[in-house]
Length: 232
Image (cartoon, rainbow, N blue to C red; front, side, top):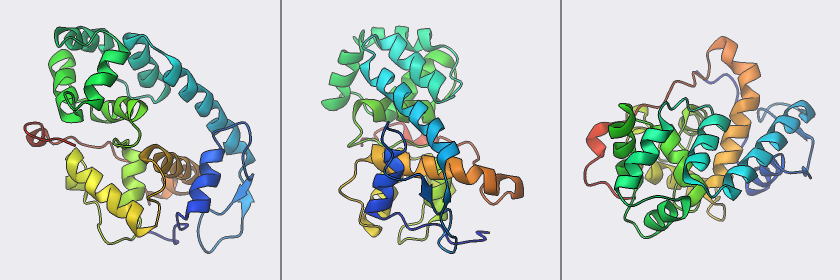
């Protein structure tokens, strides 16, 4: 049950929330809900600025294993066996971050295939981790799926609701995500920029809602039935 109406994700609001990740935030205040007055968000902005610097380090990292390890560490995805994943990718001729990026851009590697390789290497479906890897390589095509982003997408009222059972189907998730962007007229923004808005907003809400269980932030499940024959 949503107790208060979420703030509307306008283009201006997405821009402001993204600016929290930089050295020059466009504002230090904001509303948590439509009915609220603006509050001081300064204590949060320092956290997001630190994340922004870590993001820059991830983008700049060229070594494949270090790239994957930094994503795993910064975003707390708790994947065990990064070295095993790198070895498995090496068997597919992927020995560098650039070769992974090339295969992603030309369609030889999609997210479900990457998840399958991670499963073979580690024994686990590393779904959220995989979406972050792909987002850092191609933010225009690959949105992040994690508990924060998926929960807020499901909480917003728009014409294509994301049912929890569909979160594990990445192709369906992208369709729903695009419907969200279209409904709120955010098509000018990359998935990465909308991800940042949703994740930033969710992190702030965590202080206010988690204790009463309004937002559960449950781990996002992966549906292995979507592995075969799925392209995005």
